Image 1 (cartoon, rainbow, N blue to C red):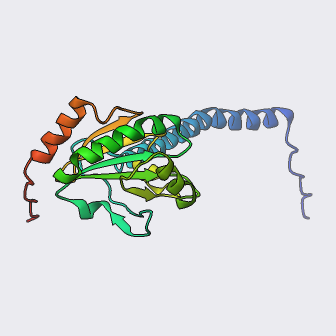
Image 2: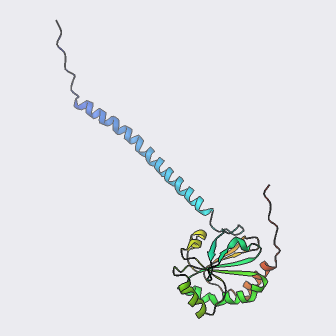
Image 3: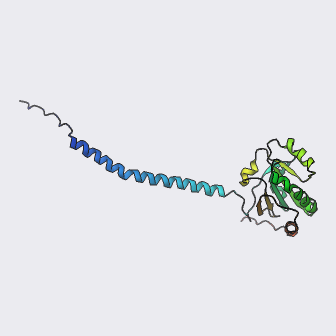
Length: 209
């Protein structure tokens, strides 16, 4: 004779409480671990991004990143092609009052030292380019070379924070100084600094073994 089957015991309230307590303990341990792991991952990505972004920013004593831009006549000018010359790079815009204030001093610097080998590259960031730059140059009686950067590529490449910003590059293509804001570029101290750079010999490049 087959003995009657006994139904499975129904879960009691104490069993349910124990199960909830068990998962509560697990979550109590897992949550802080997940939080710490998330913080470390975020910090690691942030640190890596900051380190990567710093690698291309201009550093004194290091080569300045190369660029190629058109001048007002449509001719392409490449920075690396000017190796062996002292280069004055000025990032500006026609709507910038401090830029306008320093323009006459850049012109005097250019007039004084261009025959000695100084290269001036005034990089304009106006989206309209030649349409606004040509009359601006004419109105202010300026004749130094201007490059058109309608898409602000140099602004991103060099991490500039405003206008004007100036980069001075020696004959080896190395950054000598970065100046934020306007200056009197025809001041005797400025002229003397450029003359020292212009008088320095061009050092031969080291060949990689």
